Length: 528
Image 1 (cartoon, helix red, strand yellow):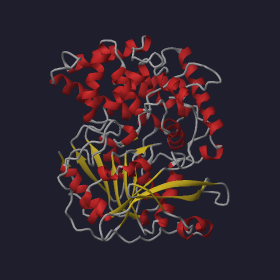
Image 2 (cartoon, one colour; image 1 turned 135 degrees about the horizontal axis):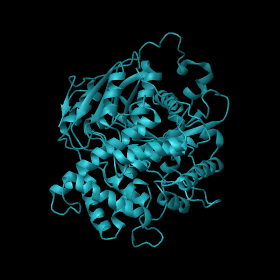
Image 3 (cartoon, helix red, strand yellow; image 1 turned 45 degrees about the horizontal axis):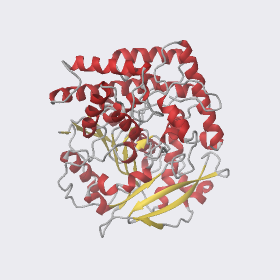
Image 4 (tube, one colour; image 1 turned 90 degrees about the vertical axis):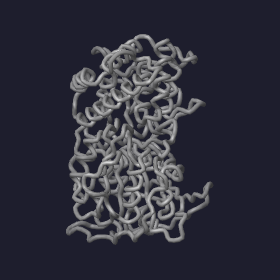
């Protein structure tokens, strides 16, 4: 998952980092068009009032030691394209409100209607992806009925983007890191991978405020979110979270059930999965999506994968295996297509059917020895810009994930599990399985507990699950909706990551009806 810092040029594993993030902006090549022909026409109704604070629980919004954060004055300023921006202050360590402080960056697109019903906080996932960027595409990401009724509010969670970011490598180091070994084959390569993981962590420690690295967990972020709710003037939090953003939303509901307004969790994560179960779920999800892609590809006329679906998958596995020892030319001598970059490019295209034609083109080129098409897909996934600069997700993702998901396995146990996943779900399973190595060597222990979340007393919460979602398997949405006391599941028979505004008018209408009025789809509703 991580590569060596340049102080010691050791070889390192670069396992496939499968982001749980909505398909937009830096996480994809395009924003999918919605199948909606206008969305909801429902008349908006007032948001629910706050519930009762559970017995024995102290509401931080009324706790004197946190009053300086909840009562702080903020100044919104025009930041272009109709948006307003501000920064607010929170404690680095929520257990030490008098200690070091950090700032959270926020943007807001005011509601376009004359009678807005509140603010809707949004997060696209990751962890590590910018919520500011998500809000910037609000006019495409959300239906007009939402935009009329809610101010759409984005924020960069702590450690990300414009909110006191985590820093690890420079751009040249990331070029080396993202192209390095992704599936160690022997003990020497495993040992080198462990050393590389430790070196990466050391680079993050050297380049980031150490106190911040210990406090970028999800529980700290949802406390930041509650301060933002108060600063927006809202009594309850209305929220749309996609992918990892569903984990934020579910933990907010667990921690502040009396503050839940209307909450949509799209492409849900099961908060009770262990580290091993998490990577196994993603391996299975991406394998389903890959099989669906090969089936679709072979139904067309220009597919480079011949014969049956299994034949096509075997041909793809052979192509990936060859890249382990012989990288493909891309036209850039400094950046050949290694096996790691090939796997990343394939994974990127599986997030949405809109990207399948690009994958077919890239694979056709790769069969002939040209890796340029798959490199383009990989760069989109990795947030690598044309000028060679990277976004911040590669730094923030492991720092947050490793605090959220306890990884107690040894490198040998991870290697054994990765081999099983490679046998079950080739050709992506092995690299996905190696994703746990970085957290096994991370210098800070996980602080989050993996458990079922019930959010007792919360207002109804709508959970969306896509049947063939590659990054967040449908089983996770079923699990979360059943765990939440007030959870309700909306199913979409799609092959894409997340469901809202991904091409289903049925999904769009039901999500918007709920966000506008609180009306939930009937139990068992499935959209096509």
